[in-house]
Image (cartoon, rainbow, N blue to C red; front, side):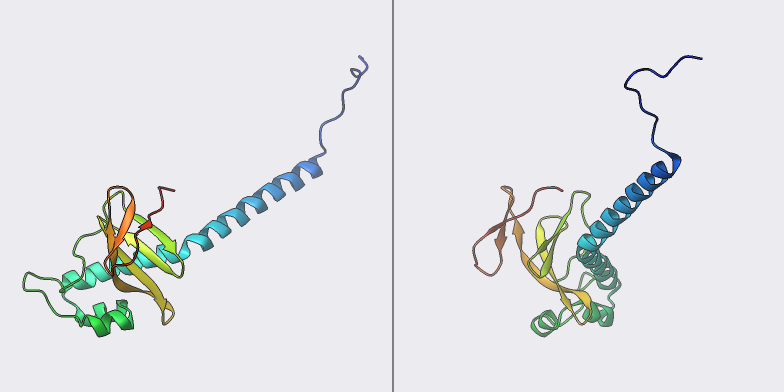
Length: 155
């Protein structure tokens, strides 16, 4: 039998391997939970947007009202559009390259060019109207006359 080579050490014990794998799995699960929590508002706002589109296209004014903020309902009462849908609400779903991001306490969603604002109100994300238009230089031109802001780049 040959003696062990000088400087060689035995590999980690099976118990140490199990602990290492368990720690790696726990770290991965923690990272996944953190990311899911961080993106939850954006995902919920996108869900509200999709439900709003469905309700508007079906002409369901009650459902539209439940998905809009109190301010938006006060300033823009839901009325059916002559061509179908609801006046003032988007009719098309998001483009494949849509953007959605957090901005302070709101979520901004840019499905095709217009940027829509969503706020957390009454325990849910609600549509709060048009925030502005996304310009070709990546800036948002607000509809209320305030200074433009930068839209985030792709994540």
